[in-house]
Image 1 (tube, rainbow, N blue to C red):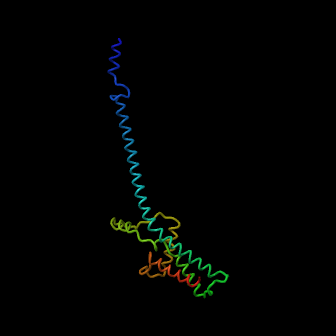
Image 2 (cartoon, rainbow, N blue to C red; image 1 turned 60 degrees about the horizontal axis):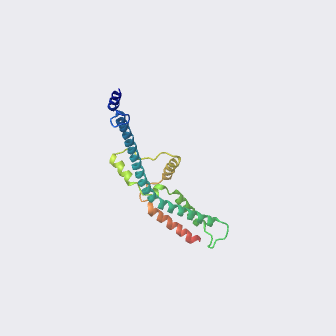
Image 3 (cartoon, rainbow, N blue to C red; image 1 turned 180 degrees about the vertical axis):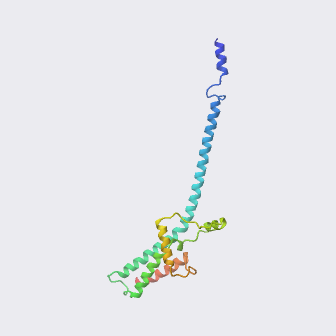
Length: 187
């Protein structure tokens, strides 16, 4: 009797052994799960590296002009505050025309928008031209962007065109010259 039992034991597949059909099924399931997880992780890493590269490029292009315009605005507003202060200044008081010119400078600096100082996104423009998109790319709508659009539309009333208008570094250079001239006059 013991031999019958030994024969049955040896003939039956061992649970978890190489011949067990559950092992193959479980192996296939684990292989698929890890393959899927690796694929998803690779896609995620690819997206992150692409986003990071785009962010780095945009950051490098936008920070210097934004910082420069911020400094010019601060200097011009400080000059206006000095010119309007009741305390005696080291130079002679400004005439009403000079004060108006200083106020106009502060106003001009406040009117400078992101699109005035940043270069156009050539890659986006080329993509739109290549794919024949009728509608230009538009960022998600926010209150700030809606306000910028409204300000731009109102500022454009009565203007003939943007042709010949200074942009980017030329605009910043011209504004900086005006601030320097005002500083020389006031300080």
